[in-house]
Length: 160
Image: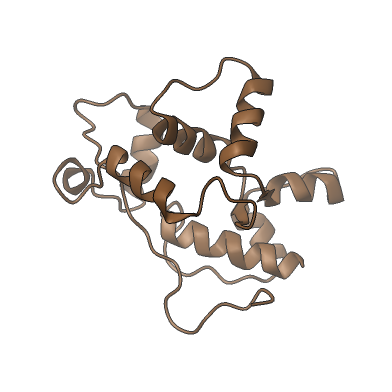
């Protein structure tokens, strides 16, 4: 596709089942997401996707464990850590070396824009700051997965 996206909607947002009254959480992260419009009451119900079901579907989709799939992120270490945790149904490795080895098995090709910009410029700001410098338009609200994902992809392709 040479960095061009298809017409219409091409990024989706979905949320895992999460009960802020029962599950472990970081209060500042929850506050940020609530202020960004995330509805945790809906996520605690059947509207939230079960992580085990998602892991099974992602594994059988052919998107992971596949050297032909290219993953694009912005400072995505925690995102990939969460995905590895649910894909393996185990605790994350205790060392960075073990983590990166496991990451390279499930996600063989990852482009992290923040790391790329650190190599190019010696530093990288936030996704919002970097996208503004590249004149990449945001669609939707910041800190919403769909909006951030689309902005990440569009920023990556602008860098090309």
